[in-house]
Length: 232
Image (cartoon, rainbow, N blue to C red):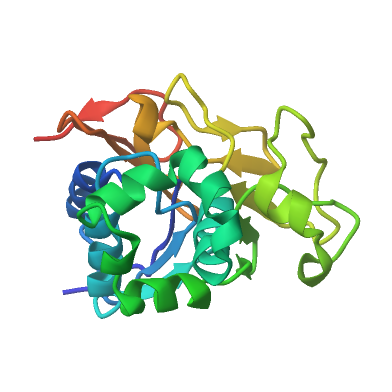
């Protein structure tokens, strides 16, 4: 039997949507040689942050996992380090995170907080780089400002091609129609799962795409195809 091609797959903002995340992982059928890049914002807004983080911790042994940090992880970490910052986080979706743990901030396991603190600011391959929100096209990836890297939406600033020549893969800016944004040098995979849209995974080599939602629907399309196919 021939060796299976190694895949580099990015996953958009999960935001506590555990049903979608589980269905997406099943559709992808993650393999040990896969690199799975999570684009950040695992917590808040959706109903099941605890289940999402437990699933992420479990799949670390199933593939090469690269978890990026998003602005919602930053808000959560900051709230636990400085209680005076908790109100801002809770009003930005953090209350649903606390509710998923049973209603008390003390119920969040230290292993979950430690994982969030270990998430990385960016990742790059030969042809792509992965960052949560946005970037300055004329600055190296290691020198990106935090307000761009984690916070600035694409409708406020859509950057040009990066100086590296690599394709940017980002999340953070919800694509409310459920379709990834693809402008050639930039791909956005936040497809508004928590708001009734889809959770998206994208193989950057083959351009295969998978989506799942909280209602239990799963669909996929092959690279180069515009048509979605429902999956059972």
